[in-house]
Image 1 (tube, rainbow, N blue to C red):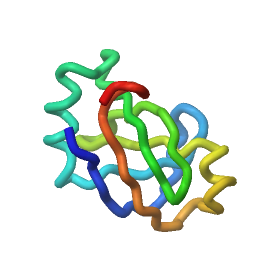
Image 2 (image 1 turned 120 degrees about the vertical axis):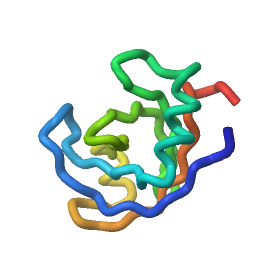
Image 3 (image 1 turned 180 degrees about the vertical axis):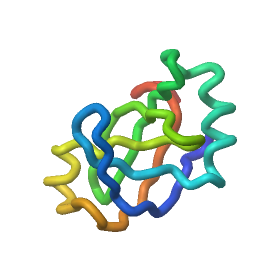
Image 4 (image 1 turned 30 degrees about the vertical axis):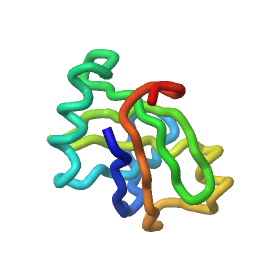
Length: 100
C-alpha cells in the first residue's frame, strides 16, 4: 500500500492517552479498511507508521464514528510543536514497523 497523505486539524478526544488525535479524512477510510483486512490487531485497531513534520512514529489507528483517529503521541507533539487546533500534514502507511 502506498503512503496515505492528508491534512488534519488536531482534535481532543478523551479516549486512550495521549488525548490529541488527527482524524483521518473520509476519502481515505476505504483504503485503510481494505489494508486492515490483513494488518488489524482486532477490535478495529489498525497499526500504522506515520510521519508528521520530521517525526516518524509507530502507533495504531482507533476506529471512531465511521472514520479512524490517529493518536499524536506527546513526543511528536513536543518535537513538532503541535497542539489542539493546529493543522498538520500526515504521511502514513498501514502496517507494523519494518514491514514494507
